[in-house]
Length: 344
Image (cartoon, rainbow, N blue to C red; front, side, top):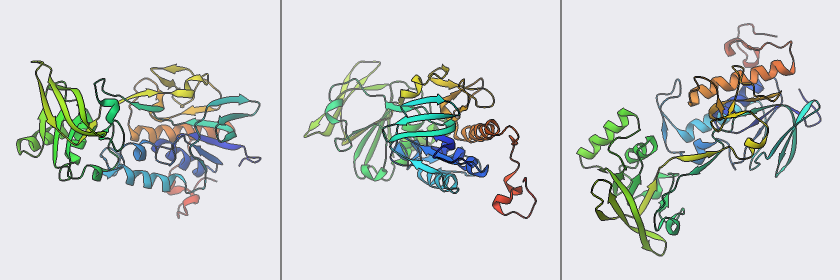
């Protein structure tokens, strides 16, 4: 264990990968700190889509993002890591025997770092059309994500996009919104085939409306509230007016590593290059999750869990070369008071 405020491992990013890394740090008996720029633990699960179902986490046929976050927080904080929120790490400075992290909330010392910052700062893509800026706010009627489905109760909703989020929320807002219309600039969707099929079946029943290939020409209303959207047919260029009370533009995000890009890390494709041990080019600094790149990388929560375990266990070995990289199976660890003998 570390003393003098110097932690063994500091995890930058408190999403599912970071929380699993914190769990593994505690499992290995390391002192740990979690630092995140957001005001709460859970990362994008809580900040962007708390009410969205996730289907590809092992052992869970489906789970709401907020419930997965709750479970991850319980698991990741069970060993008592220090938690520092609303603290963007602006500088990472390797020094003699430790690393200094500079944030608006002060400086923190650590022996190793595991970066699990996802895509960094996610800036939503916006529509370049008249009326967007006038109505883009939580109360103005134009949104770039769905926080609470109840915000759209009884409303005529226009959803814009062709990816998973757009299709998922067309289905997710059924029974809540008064009317749901989806527009996409192309006839084909990028979402999972099964959910696209479900959406098309809902459209055939009259539960939702799908309009392709359309784009938004203008958003208008009164007093900052959305009332009408002008739709443009991409084939005929004809315009028509749609009466709506809310617009949800799910066009994806532009990732921005922010300060991470200035730490001296080797980058590729706006991500951090790592070895098979999740090592970066800076000694004692590891990374895991969507923020990393290596051949064959898959951007999945499930992948992030494995990468977090690899990063932390190799950080442990870095701190103590006599320590095993592989801690063994949790069912055999005395830490969890199992009957079987575990490693000493």
